[in-house]
Image (cartoon, rainbow, N blue to C red; front, side, top):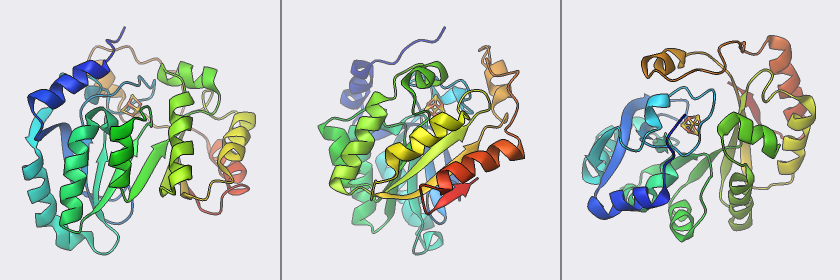
Length: 260
Ligand code: SF4
């Protein structure tokens, strides 16, 4: 149904244009993706195929616009006074790690200008470039979409093992993290798996916050516009009971849990 994105295809992009990032869109005063007020760069391309993806137009690596790193840094500097102590720049997606080598340059330049950096990722990749990129990220927002590999596969099209490996690596190096969990009735709200998810991470010292993001239907029209079948059309948004159940389970294992 969907074409897959190969790593080599991504590397081609790096070779062709090392000074530009392929982006989907830019948000100037974001407050949902990391601390404080942030410029959020939504990059183009993702190797996951989440059934609930609210931005299916970001999935193809062929779409989007190439924007130079210099231009993105210039915009961030222009906005710097609004960032305050906590804010800065977040790179989200799509999936940022697909453009990791360019993001190393971007984050380095932001740090040279004393601008806080945050990476929002599905955690699918872990190589030397990802490790270097993480060394320039002040915070990682890591989406761990299901603790059960079979369900993770059903929900995203891929295994959760690389994501769990990345989380483990981050814990080993002391990388600050916020974990994110999209709560989808019938797909990721099973109490036994919520408990397993919480128990998996409860002893991590690097996790500063856990964010529960209730499933919503805001992106459905985009699937229709793209002519892509939306498989969750019968799925309802989580009820108050489901949201509280998930919150209670997570709160028993983490001190800082936010229901968004
Ligand atoms: S990881 Fe994010 S961008 Fe990629 S398919 Fe899933 S929700 Fe969409």
